[in-house]
Length: 174
Image (cartoon, rainbow, N blue to C red; front, side, top):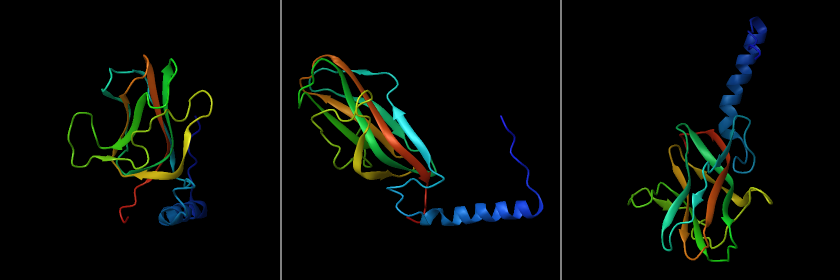
């Protein structure tokens, strides 16, 4: 591991000025939903243990990701994948929502527009990679995203999900 370089004199002044300018300009980074700013942190949240397909009519949580305090999460791609027999269109429904635990009514709950009751798996860990969203979704600090699957008639198998994107420092003026 290399040690950070200690700057003194004019070098320290230039470094402090550059850091100050970067922090002041971070709110003005153009197109944060298209291009990650220099201070962004990549996110690759993936199901660690595959979840078994539940009984017909039952909904299970496949993945949960909580946005850290002080950051916005820019979701740019997802994977919602079934592993097992042949999955036919409509055998199950995939949903991504915000602040909605299974079985608990919440006033903060909200489905993510465009990612509700999808009748087919999307994206792949083996072949195509994540499904790239046409427009990124932004989530606030402490939001909890969940990928859920509701069984309709899928054969026995396993479910995995992934959320891909990046964290950016939260701008409280938004």
